[in-house]
Length: 252
Ligand SMILES: NC(=O)c1ccc[n+]([C@@H]2O[C@H](COP(=O)([O-])OP(=O)(O)OC[C@H]3O[C@@H](n4cnc5c(N)ncnc54)[C@H](OP(=O)(O)O)[C@@H]3O)[C@@H](O)[C@H]2O)c1
Image (cartoon, rainbow, N blue to C red; front, side, top):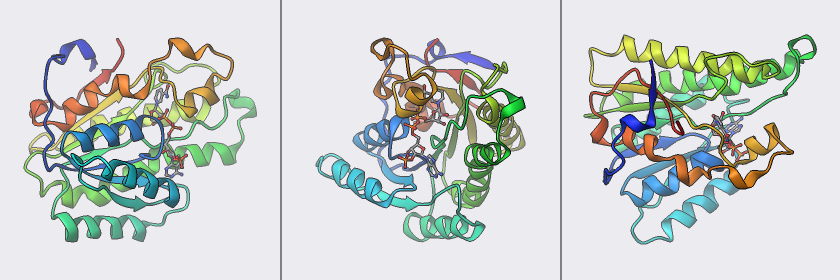
């Protein structure tokens, strides 16, 4: 079901005190802005990324704010990580926090913008793996710790090309169609338990992925990552308890 940001009241003061939240792709763009904001709202963040240096710098940066708890780090390159690494992450979260309240999937790559006729199979495979298979494996591995939370929330990040196929978007577009399907399946399969699963399409946002997709565009009119966080905060907070199966556009 397509929903609009306007359905979420804009005047909520979100509280995330002591929620344990893992954000993938936290080292840049939307994930990074979300990590900073959620830490500021009281959450204990687990920063996921593939670059140790970037993760450590971000963790230190957030911890420098006395109002924030120092984030933990989950180093996992989705391109090459094996199943044991995902299971080890789940065990670490269990040992350190005994639950996971929020899982936000932000990590992703664009791949090539090329006609299908010329799309390189090795790029196709990489994009599908990072954007779709890795979120599936991670969510599955973390299911046990999510179910230990009183109100677990899983958020997937989709795209403008995730419901109507646009030419030249190749594996990226297909991966985002897959994310919508994965999110819908997961939410319906688990609607008998307290877990909520929702998807957010951020729309056009001024990040390095957007620059890669539209190198010649005027970037002044674009929203910055900090401007589109409202639906993420909503689905992470207890304000959204009972909100399930939603696929929401952050900018319309
Ligand atoms: N920006 C937009 O206009 C827009 C529009 C629609 C949807 N989205 C979606 O929003 C999400 C965030 O995008 P963004 O624009 O914030 O992109 P971004 O700035 O390029 O950030 C992508 C993040 O994913 C991480 N990542 C990439 N490959 C990885 C791998 N193999 N293993 C682990 N982490 C990896 C990056 O790590 P590094 O820091 O190491 O590169 C970075 O933290 C994506 O799912 C994207 O599809 C974005």
